[in-house]
Image (cartoon, rainbow, N blue to C red; front, side, top):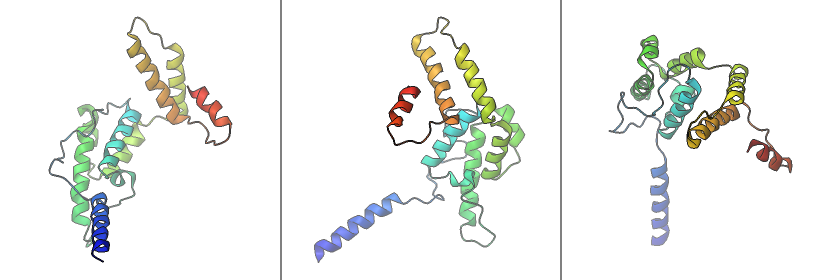
Length: 183
């Protein structure tokens, strides 16, 4: 019986360590912190958004910007915590935007509304961006660049293109053909 109680405690301790509330803030969190090295300049929205979402997901805060964790109503016990974390996220987003762009979103105080505003303004339509990438890839030349730099530029464009034109989901024998074509 004593061994059984110990194993339950260990499981409980392990499961408690895994659960983190999206309302949790740590002492190292502050609104001016840079949570991504990519700064939004306008024309790099897709790269910035992917990096920002990755950072927010790592902090379990993506629900604030994707709309899955809406603002609680007045009187809700989570409202104060939501407001606090929302303010932190707005600070993180603003810190990752170049000043010229940041000045255009100064008065948006909800992370979700700020995220959607930036998305509407800067996200390039898939067909337009696909065309731009295909054009850039077709005209891309090494022009004396180091191989690592040239290859890095190509890979970045290929990977972005892949986000717009993902391969079809396949588990049949054609999966190998698709993967080889991608390579």
